[in-house]
Image (cartoon, rainbow, N blue to C red; front, side):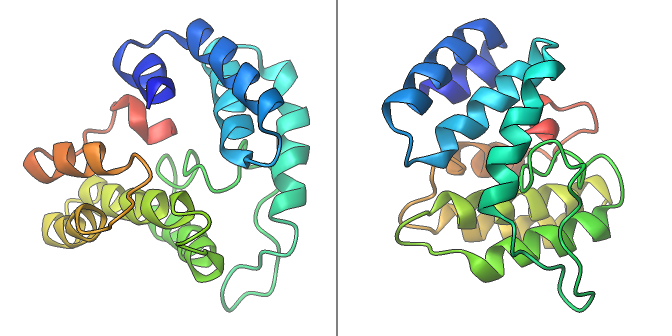
Length: 171
């Protein structure tokens, strides 16, 4: 939660980078911390550090296939599954990627792989002006026992639609 605060509420990517790096090194079996570290690097403009993070995530998602197309996820996605490109480009294409991640998710051992893609799908519908579909996804996140930190955003967006320049779009 502190990483979310540093990255998105206070927009203090330097503090987020320090904390994420410490957590990633201390808990190497939890990929979420490496993800936050890569995101913090991107936010402070240290793109040259991200390729190592791309490799980390590419290894994790190596076998992911886009539903019905039989091809790997886009290796150029800065952090696969982050939704950074899906919400900045084709919303429908982004939802395909996010649905693929959801099809592989284990809600017990990695609830973030359920809650965050569902939230991002809701955000994509909001960005397309499909408010009712967006609200369905936000409600789904809010009803989860373990929303992996996504519930505070689901509540925010249930009250007011996500806007195109919202800082969470790139997350």
